[in-house]
Length: 84
Image 1 (tube, rainbow, N blue to C red):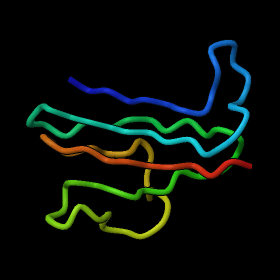
Image 2 (cartoon, rainbow, N blue to C red):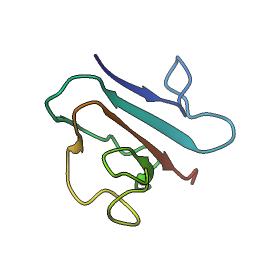
Image 3 (cartoon, one colour):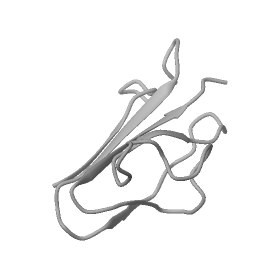
């Protein structure tokens, strides 16, 4: 099961009134899966947690290096996008 939650937009499409956007990506399958990251409000996604590493820290600091973002098998990633 692959789930991507996008927080930061109301049901009618208007931007959230306050705060940052957070995206939680999970992949319970064994095979890696790529997920496209839509830009909200024009800012970049920053990876904060990625369980493909033993420490849970992303391999590369800062924004994801490629599109789509690859979530390895049986892992999860948490990304955030600062409000403009």
